[in-house]
Length: 138
Image 1 (cartoon, rainbow, N blue to C red):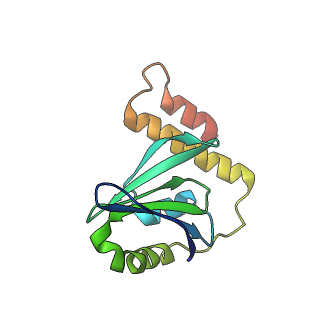
Image 2: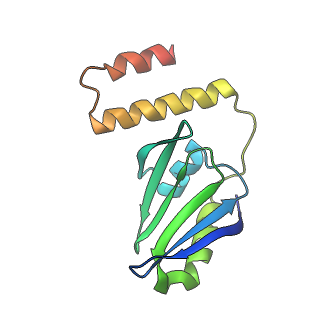
């Protein structure tokens, strides 16, 4: 995957920059795992898709919506010189989309991710997540 272009660049008050990048493909679950080394946080939902946040070293934060081709990167202004090279190398680790996955497989992956995030937050006191995950697996 590659960075196509910068959509928006905004200087924040606290010495940080916020830049929106358009990627050559959509960020899938597999791509999110590669970007974050499985260290991401689901922050909510927008347009029926999970929103994620990745915290990288040197105060670099990557946010976006799963299945979207736009990511927002927030970083200290002093690192603006090398951040695009770093981000480009990071995004290049994600393989280009393969359209072999069906809608059902994508839906199944989304359900697994939502169930995993519910389990991590331990908000499922009244909901038996193991039972639901077995239902979806079968």
